[in-house]
Image (cartoon, rainbow, N blue to C red; front, side):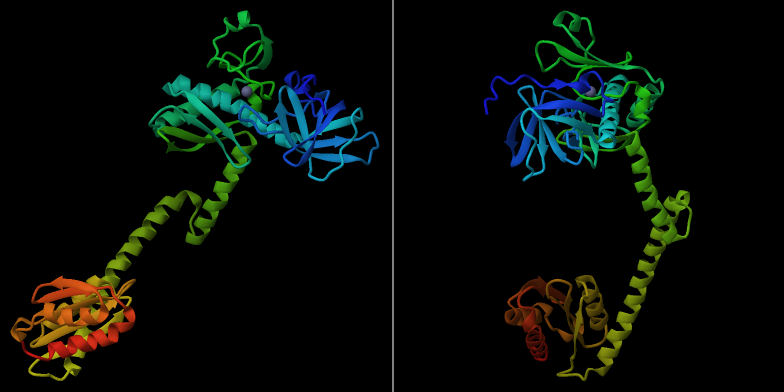
Length: 414
Ligand SMILES: [Zn+2]
């Protein structure tokens, strides 16, 4: 197809963002990204651009039953391409069609897009933070501010300023202006296009070069809620919601808060206090559990010691406690080595094998020697002093043989 001479599509949304149905003629058929794509002489469909996603909708043929879904809309050299589902057979060039916009989706985009103009103006007015980029998707709306920090007070001040501007319900006007007229308008930033520039003015709040779709008055944005912000490549990314998305965000948060409140049997307003109480109770339980475990370990150690017959005047207690951390192994080894003639060889470890050897001073045994006998079998590493040594690693499967080797070494006076 010879597309070089194609006329630019007449964009009906420029004059009327509320137009949801229109008639047009198919002027070209092409293919884009594996989809049949139609160019019309005129269209109310907004093509993706300026941070605003493309419209969706339908094209109806002259025969009432024929209908094509528009799955994407893209602009190329002034021509608006309406993409149909892959595999669809499109209407012929010259066919008359009726276009229909998915209005719920479009109005959502109008609320978010216009709300972005207002919030951007608000951040400049309240904390001198310019917007460098804008992203709008089905899941979230964000702007990136060229500042390193944003405080809660600044975010709330900008939010309050933005909502006051929404509720003043000022007119939103879009018009194409000449370069001479443009010079008289206090634009937020210089336009990226040359020639006639479309300027969108939201009362005296904001003047921007913009090709997007906007409601007729700021009040239709409804409300603007700043949902959160985070550092992003040296800037601050602000997530926000406008209009219907404020209600959706409220519902989502409300559902989460209700579920948490129900689980704790409190009202949602009492959630922070209830969570604090829960954390404090859990910490108290953990302290109590640790204390109980220490007491139990001391009793066990004494019992193992009592059941161990002396060999060459030494009581060599061996024990394996799977999942016991090294701190607990050391505590148990200490309990045993405090008893007369006690030598402890205790093993455990959560992810890798840990061995602790401890010796009562009167035994004259060297914990490092005993540990070394075990590490030689395990293939692990360790160290310490004559009273206590610890090591670990190596092959967990060799632990029983290593313990036997250490017990054997401990039974001989060096
Ligand atoms: Zn705009």
